[in-house]
Amino acid sequence: MTYDQPLFRPPSEADSLIFQVTLGCSNDTCRFCLMYKGKEFRVRSLDAIRRDVREMALEEPYARRVFLADGDALVARTSTLLSILELLRESFPRLERVSAYASPRNLIVKSTAELSQIRKAGLDLIYYGVESGDPATLDLVKKGATPDEMVKGCKKAHEAGMAISATVLLGLAGREGSARHVSGTVDVLNRIGPEYASALTLMMPFMDEYRRMMGGDWTPLNAVETLKEIRGLVAGIELAGCVFRTNHASNYLPLKGVLSKDRARLLKTLDEAIAHPTTYPLRPEWSRGL
Ligand code: SF4
Image (cartoon, rainbow, N blue to C red; front, top):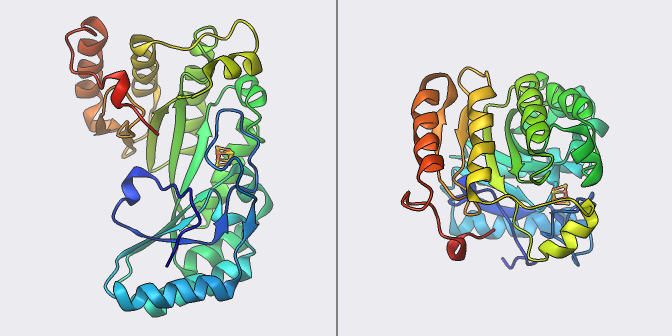
C-alpha cells in the first residue's frame, strides 16, 4: 500500500493501521492549517480503499486499531463509510477501535441517524478540532463553524454513541485575545463534554504572514504565556473523566491526566514551569514540531 503524502494522524494513533478514505481536507479554509495545502480534496474510490484493506489484511491480520485519514474522512457518504467499516470488521477479526478526524461541517451535515449507523458499523472515536471557543477567533481563522454549531454537532455524535477527542490550539488568538480564547474554549469544552481533550501549540512557518492575516496587532505567545493558556484550560474544564493531554510535539510541556482526579498535580506542574521557565525542562524550540 502506498500513501498519498503528506499523511497525518493524531499522536495516539501511532500504532494504528491507517487507510486513506479521503485525500486532503474538504474544508481547507482554516488559516492556521497548512496540513493539506496543495493537496486537491477528493474521496477515494471504494475499489481503491478495498484494495488497500485487503492488502493490509494479509500483512497485519491481527490489527486492533484503524485510523481513517485524511483530514475529515467523515465527509464521505454514509453508504461509503458503512461499506468500509463492514470491510474492516470482516478483514480484521481482532479489531477493537476505528477512529477518524471529523470537521465541524461533517457533524452539521450528517444526521444523528446517519451518525448512529456509522457508529454501529464500527466508528468508535472522532478527533475533532475545536481550536477555540471564542467566536471572534473562530471567525478570524475561518474555521467554518461557530461555537454553538460545534456544540450542536458534537452532541449529535455523542447521541450516536461516538467518543470525541477534541483538540484546541494554544496561542491561536495571540497575546491580545488570549484571555477570551481560553475562557471561550473552556466554555465550549464544558458544553461538548469530550472524553479526551488535547492542546496543541500554534506553529506557523510563516508567522509574519499569519500576523498579517490575523490583523496588525496579533502577537504570538511566548512559552510562559502558552503555559498560562494550558493552566487556564486545566483550571476551567469541569468534566469528570475527561483525559487531558498536551503530548503533541508542538507543545513546550507534555502533560497527561484525568482532570477530575489529577487537576491539582497538573496545576502544580504548570505553576512550577511558569515560575521557573529557564530552569524547568521545557521542550526547546528546536525540537518542537508538527
Ligand atoms: S478542518 Fe482541520 S484539516 Fe481542514 S483546514 Fe481546518 S484544521 Fe486543517
